[in-house]
Amino acid sequence: MTKSMRFLTVLVLLSVSACGSGKTINGLTIKPGANLVGADLMDADLSNVDMRRVDLRGAKLAGANLSGANLSGANLKGAFLRETNLSGANLVNASFNGAFLSLANLSGANLSGANFTDACLCNANLIDADLTGANLSGTDLSGTTMPNGAIYGSK
Image 1 (cartoon, rainbow, N blue to C red):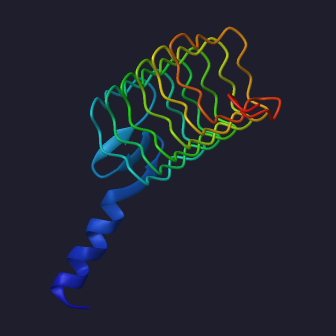
Image 2 (cartoon, rainbow, N blue to C red):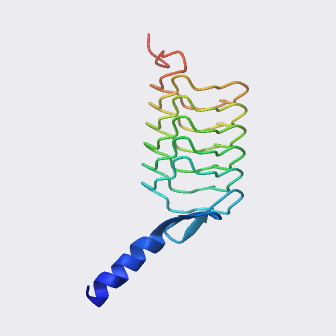
């Protein structure tokens, strides 16, 4: 193995590793309460990760897999979540104020008490999602598939 191949192997092992203190991606440690403001986590696999109370304001999560993740109490204000998979995620009391969730998959997610004020949920999938007590004030739901399967805005 050449020196550059060893370096690349070490770099790959460092860029995505899981340990008892959280999951590390691109040098960022993902664990409950972490400060990830503005983080670039596009296309990251964060499925089933414990991310309670994580601060992801303004983070880039487009295309990321957060299925089954626990994001209860997380702050995702202004985050970019286009085509993000949040199916089955725990998003209880999470804040999505002004977030962009176009084409996001939130099927089966627990969104109880979540705040989506002024967010974009355009063409998102909310089938079987629990929206009990969620705040959708000013939210753009154009083309969104609602929990009952109806398309918002269709006649």
